[in-house]
Amino acid sequence: MKKIILFRHGKSAWESGISDFERDLNPIGVKRTGKSAEYLFKNPHLKIDAWYSSPAKRAERTAEIAAGHFHEIPEIRLNRVLYTFSFFDLLKFVKKLDNSLQTIILFGHNEAFTEFVNRMGNQYLDNLPTSGVAILEFDISDWQKIDKGKTLSIIKPKSL
Image (cartoon, rainbow, N blue to C red; front, side, top):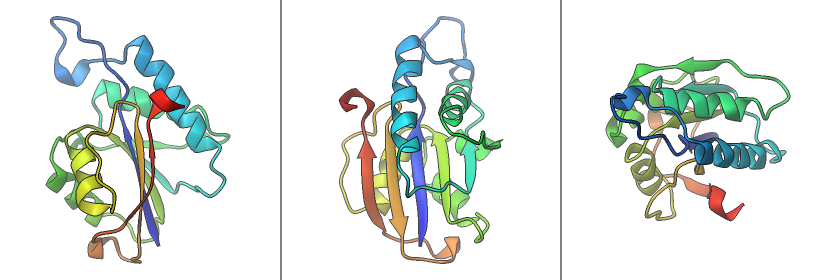
């Protein structure tokens, strides 16, 4: 069994003159990211083998805040491929993962994350909100063979 945790970046600031890539989180984004991360940390069944993030500032900062809620601070691997809004780019990334990894967490962006949940999970989602988390499970041992799986949970920080 393989698991993917999709953690959408927190609500970002919209300052003029700042590129999309450089946008940081706003205070609400920081707070809600902390709530979602704390909820994940309290799940005793999740052992995350690898942490990957888009290098966009808002995604990287979301990953750093989330990592701070865990006892052992993980290594967050930044990957330019995850600065995508495409389901297909995300799927290609997942298919290249090392098969020794059982559970991974990805920090990134919509539309890619919502579409990934809808295409690869078994529960329809209108929109994965900012700082929202989706956990999907797949009955595979080889990431190359990823196909339709099961949506284990959707975490919406406004409801925590």
